[in-house]
Length: 191
Image (tube, rainbow, N blue to C red):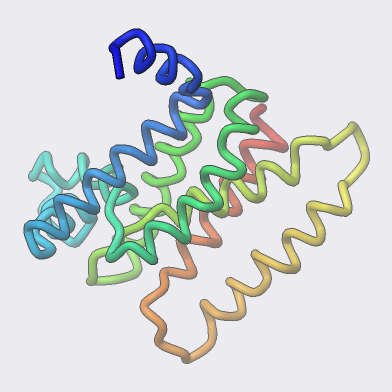
């Protein structure tokens, strides 16, 4: 196989969603490194209680969204991000989507810091933000989309119920709720 055919084959692919695909790839690298180094990468990057004088505390507000506990956790989050994210990135633009992802992760991390002593990882807050943002896309003045109501009932209300049940499932339901609220605010009030 010559290099021209290889280049022709490679040129058939498009990096069509810069922010979403970069988020996916960086998170995949973090997952692989975390697996190789037996959890030490997540311990370093995940948000947790610590001194506000430590600069890593502020970096971890964002990097915690790159960490996942295992392949299943990663896959479940990125199936939805890869499905919805490129559509929203095309509609709103790469920089606004990047800002929304970062802001959602920071707010979710801060909420977690104030409520819990444990660390938190994952991109599910951004999954919920994107889901709700997607359902708000077609809001017209004075009209509430039925899809928004259904998304709220199927996704958000379920998370609220799970958050306040006594069930221990190691899932940060409050992060899902925060993500959904961010998606609504971004879609309805900001963009």
